[in-house]
Image (cartoon, rainbow, N blue to C red; front, side, top):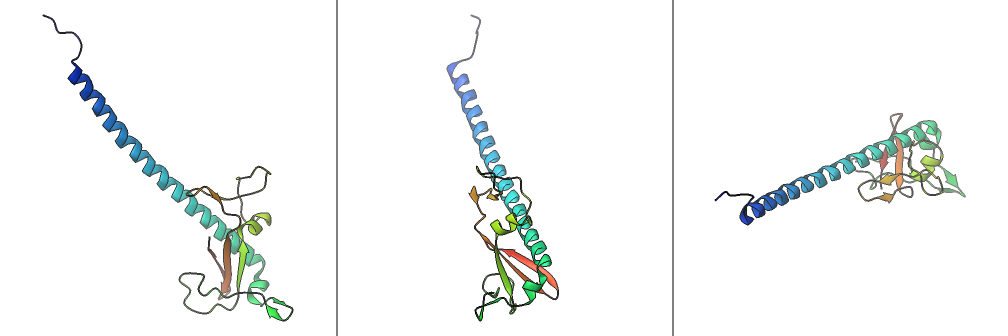
Length: 148
């Protein structure tokens, strides 16, 4: 007798193999997608910090002289806020990402429903406009650190 078609066992074996290959492929795609989102977010942090440095260069006087309001110094020190700073920094400015966006120190094409500039953390999908950057000067060089 001629045998036509596949047996039930052969069909089930093929289905199981296809399922296994699909599971492996989709888990790999998920890991790659997560790594890409993390890389994009790290690039946005660099963009934020570079914008803050440009702000600091344009406002060097403010970064090298204390800001006094009603006899009280309004500036803060960076110690305790920025990893890697082991010495006192005389003056440190804390600026919001939103302020830097509004003053055009950070370029972005991301917009909210009101057409306002925003920056989105691609890892958490949160808008980070209300987070802060610390800006200071050492040896006439402006530095910035995104504090989140």
